[in-house]
Length: 452
Image (cartoon, rainbow, N blue to C red; front, side):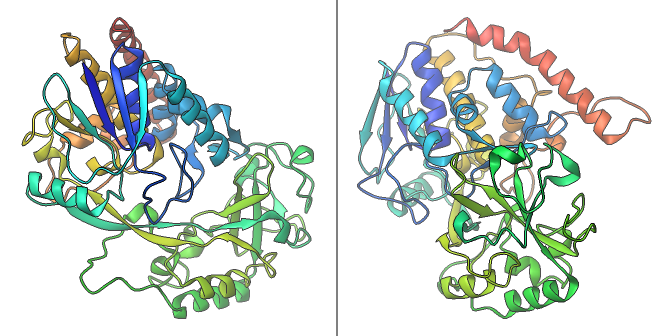
């Protein structure tokens, strides 16, 4: 009995792991190096392309809870992420190369996993005994996407954007300061970029005064953009808008968005800046940083010119420009059953962003759930979905929640049943929901671990 997993990204790798750990043979098919999506550069499994951050770590954040649930469930992805973590204040961010290396090594070394490198252009034949998991992500190849569209009778697509990465050597340390918002993670000496001396003050902040900020926004709005082709309909995910789209909504939109200065004090002036651009460490050696929230579809030439208007980045060296890519997903509530199986093609399962989850951790969670429930089915056991009160249950609930305009979603507290807590502040209420989730998770983990 062999399961074929198509796609070596977060969802595919995570789906393969619990299947193999539960004694099932897995063929993990990855198209690299024979083909790449527009966002990919390397040949390893689990290449992170949009950002190196897996977002907030605190349990009062829904994504923080989701990560903790995955850790307790012995997720391969979270284990490798923790092993390759870099300073990021209150978030979990990773060294992309170390992370990818760790996932690749673990899967290639597993005795029940065989990694094959080939391009899949058609949904493979599948049966109840030899099922297929499609985990091909938001950039599913055109031929395979067309075959999937034929099977399900249509697909939706919108566009996602990637933030730039810059060289640390090109940052003018005399004009920036390192500090996390509200001092979270600790603060270091002003202006000094040595990570060892600064502890966990993980963000480099480029401060703007009002005049600098308004000139910067004006340049973004008037910059030349990469336009979509005539037959493409652009639909951005609201949680990952290009900076020029935000800037076009009003002069102060960026100052209340990715450039918000709240919780920061410039040690050079002793005051809060009018706005900031935050830089987050990309690798363990701190040789590269990404511009937080600065996904963009500006042309490469315009990016270089405009980013050099950022204080401290006047001589910036861009290691990877921002870009825009397609995100393809299905209408999961009507097309998938409760085990993430295609109703129109029994034996074919979908996992990850192609189902309409958004984000690294959510993709990982979708792969994990698909792998665990499929393993239970193949072993003839009762399928046990996660409790709806957990973040993992919230991911499954999202895929089953039939709303008029189904759109990709990050994990959020609205996907988890509320808790009765009168006159409780939001943060305290979320903490209570997280405590409930972890309590409800424990017996479910005990039940699924019996299949190991």
